Length: 269
Figure 1 (cartoon, rainbow, N blue to C red):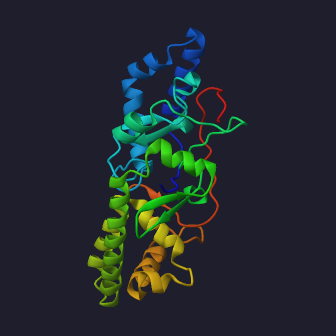
Figure 2 (figure 1 turned 135 degrees about the vertical axis):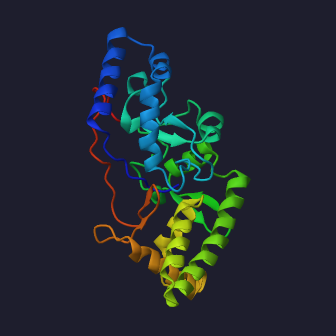
């Protein structure tokens, strides 16, 4: 799981979300039915969520499968008035959404969510990724619940991340080699392929560790050189960064949720 930037919606679409939330308040319920009937709104929201997702429309939870639908981070069953809250919408694959998360939404004793929202939280504060095995280890109760609820410890995901680590190191070495030969067109193609592949969390973790004292020993000098090239390709506000297509990976620095028009007045949990 990687941090993602939530952009602002067009004013017209944001206004329609507000109008639907007001309609829910007036009719006193029926959130699931109104959501199901709002096909145009769902289709337009999907476009913006796909633009936020990492790689090629990847699920914001597992990072492996292609996202297929809008997930309500706080489920409609629990918070019907947030059905049309843009800050409550994430892009998920069918397995993570329907098979794993469903209507689960654990909270702590203060009512705060115990699931990572990648558009508001820094996942690395709650999860450690063991690159060689592809396994996630929790760093906090939120990390532990996130692994369990989304099934981030599924064997197929762990194998996929471990293979992505092998692939990333190879492609990073290739990137460094092409750059040394001044083959910039091919180097750009490799950098783009790195950015859009599944399991963006693997490359994100490698970028975070790039400056560590043991990075050269662990990754190898050519792979580190490739990571440094990636970091320089798209600096953002002085931070090291990797701009992906269409999403964005930011390996370091504090994050703040974007100010976004809220649909109505429901409180963000």
